[in-house]
Amino acid sequence: MPQTDRPPLATIAIPRLPPPLWGRAGVGGLPSLALMLLLSGPAAADTAAVVADHARPGYAAFDDAVARLADVESCDPEALRPAFQVAYDAWMAVEHLHLGPSEEDGRALSILFWPDPKGLGAKAQTALLKADPASLSLDGMAQQSVAARGLSGLERLLFPTKPLAADPCPLIQVTIDDLARQAAVLSADWGPFGDTLLSAGQAGNTRFLKPEEATQALFTQLATGLEFIADRRIGRPLATFDKPRPDLAEGQASGRALANITLSLKGLRGLAVSLSPDSARTLAAFDHAINLSETLNDPLLDHITDPQAWLKLEILQQAVRATRDAAIAEIGPALGVELGFNSQDGD
Image (cartoon, rainbow, N blue to C red; front, side):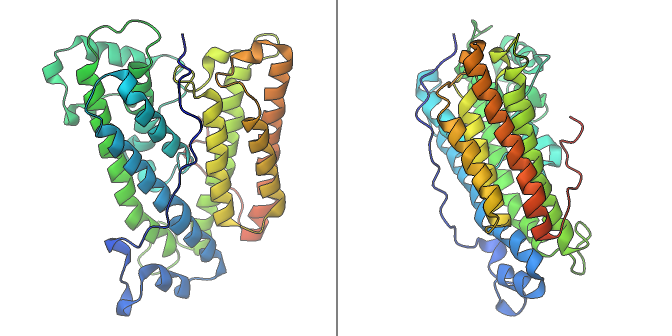
């Protein structure tokens, strides 16, 4: 049976972090972020806010949460579950950023591989559980299928829906260590990648040839993230009125099906605020969708087998799509950009 003992949705306090060593000094001793703002036009200020207030502190918070999970000296699922939930919450704040370090080596997928309609993760984990525990290593995990790693892999081990093939302790430990390494790399790599976004259009930046290209890339993450919530996080369990599929909800085993919708909406709202804080229509649409999600009172989305509950979830889906439409109509023109290509397009 699905586990529902997850703590209440956590509001992750993301502090305003001091500039790390890689961002403290630029030309002539000026802080690099201030230097970028001086050299760039108004559009880059939106990018700067995303880097300084959203991405870097968000990934730092995720790194910290996974480190705390790794510090739990136990293989007991009951002992690990609270820290797992906090780490998962932290990932929801930044998982929509599918660019830069998240794209490299399939890192984002290795942190959260979902959906997995063919059950590839479970099959790969069964093989690992049956193998010699001594063969499990941190470097070896990096070579495993992304479907067997990360938060999804841990969920299957900490919230099993059927008996596991063998003692999961060695696999739990190496999966957590692998996740911690990925989180640390992401947090560190957003230092130089953030500088790449901020230096868009400057000599030597071959990734973003104009400031607008960096802003467009971030704006595309916003629109694509909302589309993912509507089509996947809501659309998969919603299925059809005659045949809803709550079993297809993300994180159902760990009681996160509705939580992931709410937290990902909040994370995307944070991105929208950083990009365009004066976009009242879009922010109002976000607030409406978040309010609907928070008051749905269906943690596993298993109530949608009832027609009234199904209709409420469909109304939330419509609200998420309306939020995307509002962002495209309001934030895009405010930034002077249109949607660009995203790594999730065509998935």
